[in-house]
Amino acid sequence: MAKILANDGIDPVGKALLERAGFTVDTQNIPQDQLASRLNEYDAITVRSATKVRKELIDACPNLKLIGRGGVGMDNIDVDYAKSKGLAVVNTPASSSLSVAELVFAHLFTGVRFLQDANRKMPVEGAEKFNDLKKAYTKGIELRGKTIGILGFGRIGREVAKIALGLGMEVLAYDLYEFNPEVELSFMGASKVKLYVKVATKDELLKNSDFISVHTPAVDKPEIGATEFALLKDGAFIVNASRGGVIDENALLAALNSGKIAFAGLDVFENEPKPLEALLKHPKISLTPHIGASTNEAQERIGTELANLIIDFFKK
Ligand code: NAD
Image (cartoon, rainbow, N blue to C red; front, side, top):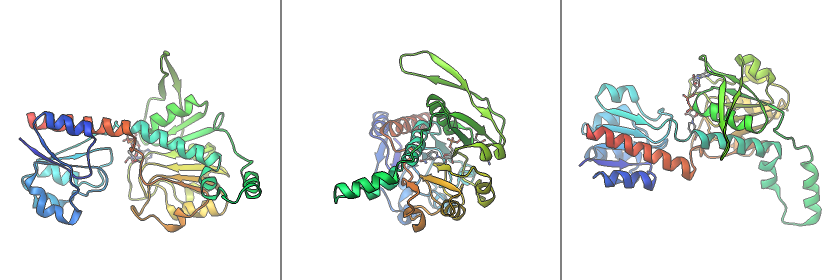
């Protein structure tokens, strides 16, 4: 039976599904520079975002039949080349959307109540410093009643919209392609509610949003650079949990430092795993190390979906 290398790990539920179906699953993490000489003994490799499966690796491993990506973005895989060589390439696009959307709100709630700064500065010295710090955070704001602009209205963008609508926010959405503005919210134990986002142009969204969340794919040229920052409302907040490079980081720093925008939440960076130090130390930036999909629930869904895709492929 086929042998799978889960090089960036796989949820135990997915591993168990594969093993029950008769596959051998190896979860050792082979370093990138050793993969070319060792991957050929496997029939399939699964990766998350860390391991790269480039043309040279594909050429070095003619026994490989399938590349599986646990998650959405395939920018670490030479997909077209793999397919041209007859390999199957599969991913699990929807499994993590809700977790990424919730992380967006973790950043937004952090920003409106200064948690990124308060966490770093809470004094151990006692009452006097505590009270000084308290005075620094008196201008918090609520999300309810504010406008969020969602740039890229795909799977994650729609989940962000549902949470925003549930919180009583107004939602502006922009996508390259026409989309259905209807969003269905289902609350536990209650019936479903249909709500609508407002379809906007990119400029309308940038000019009229208090908060902006970016959910477009990886690109060569940033979606948000100096020109776009200039259009934003003064004091706007921005979150990027899509891909590094979608927001121009130098333009972002300039907009924060000039006071044009009030806050940024970043889960992804142009240089991963070593983001710019100016971002890491900035008091107005909330940071997470690319953990959008890192919840127990998302990982279980990803592992299960990936296992089923692999089982279906090798059954054929
Ligand atoms: P998706 O394909 O469902 O949605 C992306 C949407 O963006 C599509 O509707 C597309 O039409 C639109 N789009 C593309 N280019 C655009 C542009 N220039 N302007 C406006 N809209 C544009 O993808 P998704 O599953 O919602 O994922 C969105 C992003 O989140 C991707 O970059 C993905 O890699 C990233 N992601 C990040 C994490 C994380 O851990 N932070 C996890 C999963 C996905």
